Figure 1 (cartoon, rainbow, N blue to C red):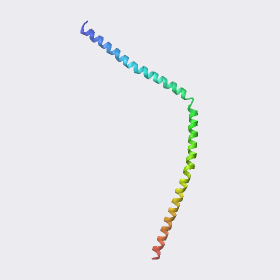
Figure 2: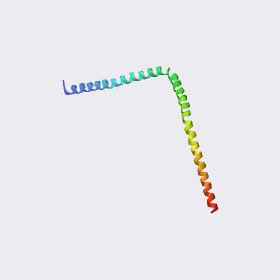
Figure 3: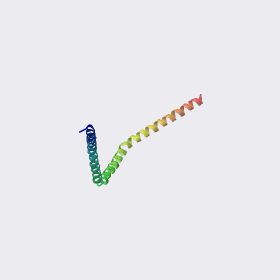
Length: 101
């Protein structure tokens, strides 16, 4: 065998190895995509039921948070009213003192 024959044989061998090493990830990706599509098909049956559970949980947490936070909001509101009234009273009294001087 001549050097040209060995060259041709090595090129064929390298092409075959590149094809095999490229084919393995391609086959793996093919089966991964097929599995994801099958899983998606199966899960579509459960999505409305799960969505209902999440909607119910959202409503319950909204109601509970409103019950918990309502007294805090009222307390801050009263605090702001007292501070505003006190500030207005202090400003009004300060203005009267300056006018009487």
